[in-house]
Image 1 (tube, rainbow, N blue to C red):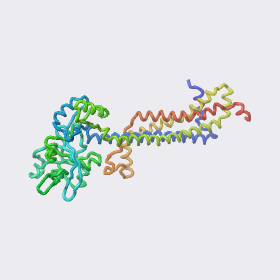
Image 2 (image 1 turned 180 degrees about the vertical axis):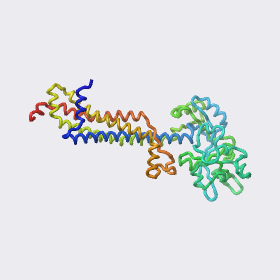
Image 3 (image 1 turned 90 degrees about the vertical axis):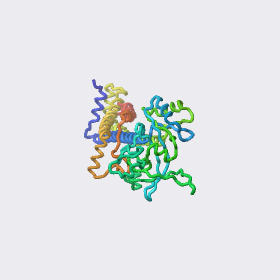
Image 4 (image 1 turned 135 degrees about the horizontal axis):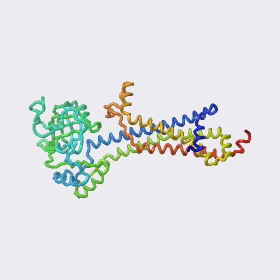
Length: 426
């Protein structure tokens, strides 16, 4: 059974000729809440999408945990890998070599990060993204059989470079480049930089400008020979079953292996970046919440005007036995109905846009003939969107709470009206 307070509050929402201005303010309040809720849902979904996309790219090219030795290069890494594999939560492990070098093609020279990887198990731990040209398998040691490759190049060790790096140096697939190591070799003429020719057997695109413009991969054995490391490696990259338990698993590995081994997880290595993203998300939430607060002030002003307009009605209700609590309920219900309508419509619109953002962005691009996110600038082929229904729930509850709080003062004023004073001159 519907209470009389709710019935009267719904009647007050319907405009009469004398109340057109009040109804316009009420409509503006609904529109403000609608825009605020929709904007919050869409923006937070896009920011969640960016964060997830960024995390996936970082954790694609990098491992979840890196294990190294305090003394420098790691010795007897096969034994260490066997012990690491026994730690609960570890999915896979692979040795790696990390070094800085220079890549030379003709007169073009640029600094690179040279990575040696084990082809047998590296892809179980990391992902290089998309191989645009060539194949990862061509990095293998020994002579390779590639259709159309000159016979004299079949024995040249292979190298895999990023798309931006290839573009900057003007390098094409199956061309030879020279890798120069900063650690030189001693000759009668003094120290001379170590230089070796490599064949570009693949060009990858990780989707991250920093990686695509600096990273170069060669096989672990070729890297050991080039850097004169013998059987040593820089460390071991580890993949775990739960990325959010990487810190605990890293500590368990350190405890199991003891000194001089130490591990770093992906959260430590990218803490500043993800902290900045979280801070930006909170700031955007606060800024967009101001739209809802402005709409709440519209609710307050509309209710105050209705209370002033309905003095006579309130006095008659009180003389008929309506309590102060009943009068308060009428205007609280009215404000909550406005808030609920705006929240409901804003939630529908926000979810509809957030869940179909990719299709909408393509439509806008086609309609106006421009690219929203150019790939060569942002390295995103689409506008990422990921709806977090926990965020949606917080937005809904927060908006309804603000709507409720905005009704308290006008409804309290209405409940304090004196019937005798209101009806004196009627």
